[in-house]
Image 1 (cartoon, rainbow, N blue to C red):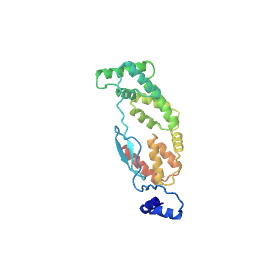
Image 2: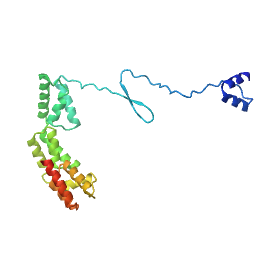
Image 3: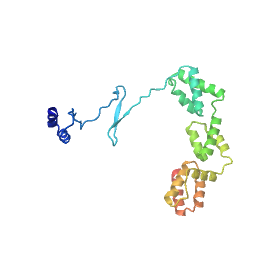
Image 4: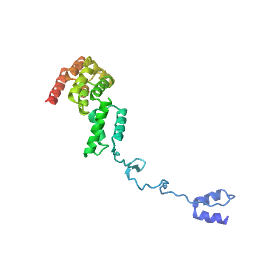
Length: 245
C-alpha cells in the first residue's frame, strides 16, 4: 500500500482511484503519451524522389515513378514483330507507324532509317499496312459511332498523315448516301442536346456542330426548325464569316 501512495503522489488520477477502492492491488501506472506523432513503420525510400501534396488531413507524399526510354531495336525481325504488335492493337496509317518505329531505332542514322523503310515495305506487301483501307475504315467508324460530319473526318485523317487524294476518295464514298441534317441530329441526340431556350444555348449548339464537322448551312437549317430568332442566326452567321476570313 505504501508503494501505491508513492505512485499516487506522482499521479493525481491514480490517487483518486485508490481512494475510491482501498482494496485494489497496487499496480504500475504508465503515463500516457499525449503529444507526438505516431512513427511510421514503412521503410524509408532512398532511391525515389518524394514531394509533398497538401491534404486536409495532413501532408501526404507522392512517389515519382521514373520511366526509362523505349528499348532500341537493332534487327529487322525485332522491329517487325514490334510493328505487327502495334498494328494488332489498333489500325494505324503509314505516317503514324513510321513515327512509332522511329522511337525504337536510332532515327538519326542511316541504319535506323533503312530499318523503318524495310519494315513499312514488308508490312505493305503482306497487306498489314494500307492507307486506303485505313481511311475507309476510319471514315465509316466515325460516321456510324461518333456521328461526325465529313469535315471533321477529313481534318482528322490529315493530322494522321494520310494523303489528300486517299482521304477525298474514302470520305466521299463513306458519306455518299448520308443525309448531313439527319447525321447532325443524330449527333445532337447522342450528346443529349435539346432545343435551345436562349441565344447562349443556340450559340453553344452551333459551335459544337461546327467542331463535329457539319456545314454552317446544315446547322442553320436545324436552328431555324427549332424556331431560333433571326437576330441570333445573324450573329452566328457573322461569326462564321469572321472565322472564314
